[in-house]
Image (cartoon, rainbow, N blue to C red; front, side):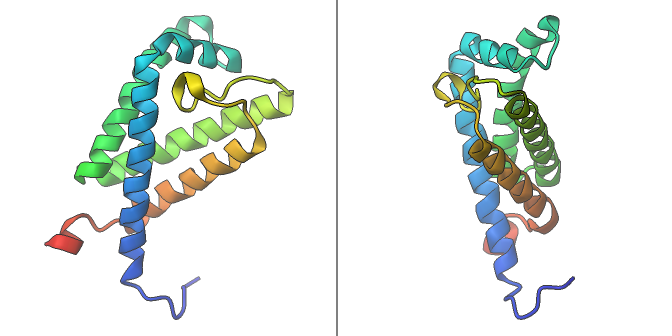
Length: 149
């Protein structure tokens, strides 16, 4: 299906806006989790999806992965790879949220470190929106040179 009468030059502009928005989200989330790794470990544990032996590993690795994704998106370095990882992470977050919403658990999201709210359906829709934005960036991003080159 082709989008008719939609100005094509705006598509790379939206991809850039989405790319920078995703970068800000990942950068903020990663920094918040690095500051309080213990609180993030507890949030991961509360999801009851990983074995206990993997919780600390994920709590240490995930924030750094988020920061690396953010830096790649900002710098325009391997944007397709960063957008792929971004979409994969948001899909995993959405699946984890769905499992625990269906199970009726009243737990902290852990999305932005210790100060995240309780999981709810809005957070699921938000993560699915970020997933779609990541896919859009993967498909339509043209890089910084498109605008300044």
